[in-house]
Image (cartoon, rainbow, N blue to C red; front, side, top):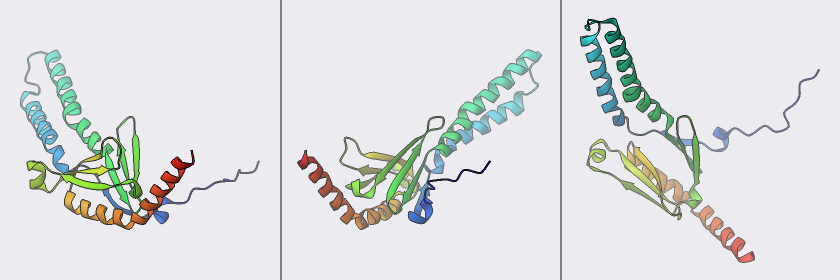
Length: 179
């Protein structure tokens, strides 16, 4: 039996579309879960084997393990599961843990890029990036580190794609005028 050949082999995306930056939410979002982990570890060290009955110790261990999973592991996995990749042609947004969502926005569709910062984000240099595509609500990239640097880089990349955006708008108008 011969090995079947592949009729179609996709081109590698790295060569065709270089990645400018890969981002996650700012690492400070893991501060409170880490404090919770330290608190649970402290309580476990203090109360471990301190109850008179075996079932009390087992319940305490079970509740401690559950607290670690809910208060530390779940936020960590959520933080690891959400990321933003900015390439030379588009912004790719990955969200979700069990159900993954991938959203892509071409630079030709972006009309405006805005940064919003609250007081805590401003202290750490983080911020929310809003990508206005002309749709109902802007696409929001939550709590990105070095938000102003990302804004300037993204604005520059969108400006380099401005001729493409104009071409896409002309094509859209031609398409709607034909029908």
